[in-house]
Length: 241
Image (cartoon, rainbow, N blue to C red):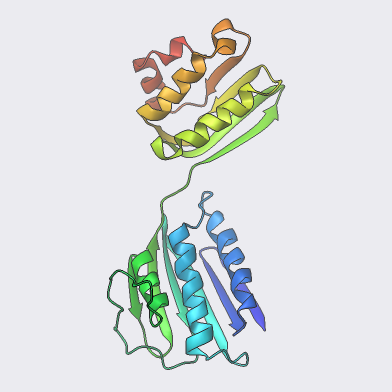
């Protein structure tokens, strides 16, 4: 048995205690989270959710496929999610939490809940067989590239900062290596740009094809703040705005 209900701000899954259903549920959660401004579940969130489901199946329900695991995930605010997993086992006493501590390599018991507690903002038990967890997840910037009116449009979503500098550089180099001579950096979804990624743009401007004019880059849909930034750094004299 596998049943899923989707709402605007939540997802509920009711499933038999089959380990095979865990991967299916993880894909549903990724699709659900992706609906909120292109967010991607962090590695920590993925690990915690998977461990909670496995714990419910293997320990809470004892691997009995006739017993049910219920999951409810809610988008409570920007980048913040609440997760509740319930099984048919006795669970931990209400309010009991595994301590935040380092795992021992040879440790066998309670490893799953210790991982969940370490990967989440808060973990609490809420009655028989029920665990609640809260996550705060940073957005991951995405770089979308496509052809439009004979030009390559590169459209980042999120912040263009040091953490994604290499992805930014690769997106620009992919255009530079293509046969399309002109590119637009569409900043309509860009929250901010830091000095590291401005340096990536400067490196592009210093490449032979751009310096010679054989390859051209324009910056479009800048917010007033980004427009000021490019003018303060004089990059508006290098790139068409």
